[in-house]
Image 1: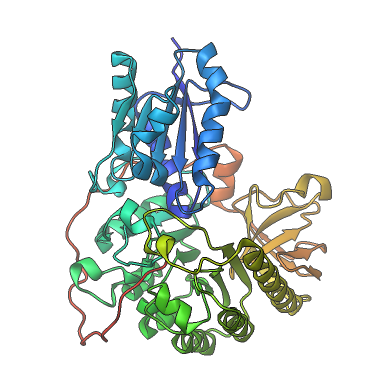
Image 2: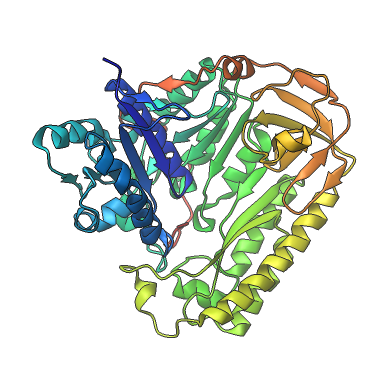
Length: 490
């Protein structure tokens, strides 16, 4: 009898993407197999996001599309997990009775057992825990990439941003001990992975649980000691917790990329206060200034919300002013989305949709001009690219391949006669710049074949078995930490 097949559909942030790798690892350990490209899966798992207003509609629309397949194949199972499941709980089954399993952010490890229980009992199983069942790092993970991997260093968030629903769905911050993180990184490198991204809801507050304010900078430096690890990235930090020791660690550790995603959210101090963001625009710009002093080549990106309740034209102009001063290489811009259960959802002075749209378009136009200007400065320069799969949607038509520079910029290049594989590293000279990407249409200047490239070519992906949660090992900081105030990245 052939194994039951599965498909995981992921929505939302990098944390969800990494959770989906764990869901795949759990299912395969339980005997399931990934569905083929043209196959019909026996189990479909939705790993959901609840950050945006249309998340609910998107999920229920997709569930509706699956209903005919479920009716035609009663043995098929549908599971819903992630942040929206944590929020809606039993409501999902009430609205879509053909769903078999609902599980939350705190018990992703329960999925195989819940699927089996639902099949045996012939009824929907809903299990939502209000606190973490096991630390996610203890769970197996089937990695999507042979060359680049997510490594979770913490889960949850201790902040209270008024627009954000994530802390109530992910819980309070919990940190892994450094030794476990480094063991996972080393295991991935042994499998051929050359780039890791350290993940946390508020990644640079790492160490708060065990009282070491400087733990994150130490962790970056420790990653620099791992042979074979070419690139280290992290996301997303919070300006409140961004200290000078982290800047020094980035600048002084050769494999830490000079790429920083630093959420701004608003350039108006009044709006930042209403958002419960603990920094103000002067502090934010000061951080960027110190980053560029230490790393003149740093590429800095950000998140910005347009139309937060009560935002005036003067507030929005303050955002434009900070964006102009910051010279971001790119920005993820969002129109404010009211989420039930957040303090901002009940604030007066919700900004009319047409006003938000007009401001949003002005912000996007400004940022596009800045991004394009900065990218044009790279024309004629040589860039090291980690070749990726799936980054260039038009690569087949243009006969190009794509990847990321060390600064995180997307580069499309012409491989020519070189037998370049995803996972390999090439040096190319930039010939053209657009706001969101660079093009290198000349010859490849250098090509380094890698173990990751070998494994990608062979169809081999790393699978990690999970590392147990233990006690911290960095200890207390040697010098007193500076006082901080409260709030977070999401």
